[in-house]
Amino acid sequence: ADYLLLEAAHRGFRITSEPQYHGSYTEVRDSLLAQIPIIRWLTQDNRGQQNRLAILESLLRQRLRQLDTGVSGAGSAVGPPFTADGTPESLPLADQIRSELREMKGVEMNLLQAREEDWRASSQQTIIVLMTGSSAVIVIFMLIIIILNRQKQELQRADRELKAATDRLDEKVRERTAALVRANDRLSHLAAVVESSEDAIVTKDTNGIITG
Image (cartoon, rainbow, N blue to C red; front, side, top):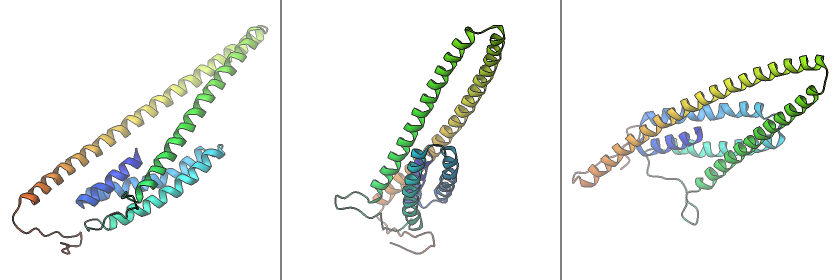
């Protein structure tokens, strides 16, 4: 979601040169870079994910350099470079980033599912052993049930917190998207005015220099 916000804010600033898009771009850019060491720490026990993260970080930093160049050149008539087939050179890089993100997410989901299955299998084996034991073992079994229930409650609480955080993020995405839609509407209106105007129209960059 943050990466999509980054691309949207970049496009908005390139089109309109409005400060709000530049602020959003800078905020999301810094947030993405700050998340990399956190993800590295969370996946430190998974060499495959660590390797994927290294690739993703390299691609992301390359893409950020492209976007930073685009932001610094906002308001000019110069667009991104194009390949021989007429597509922007930045598109393959952006596609690679999205692909790596999807792959990392898929691996994490599979790991979570495997851990849940292992936990269930372990719980079933524990129950079988305890049911065949003595009364002392039954007491231990009851204690284990209490511990498992507490763990379940903690997992449920963590799930609720994660859902709440996701809902907040989705709301933020909707707000940012609505802002982009409003800006695009204003831009479309401005384009219509420009097309219908018979007067000369002068454009300036962010430094007030006439560009066309």
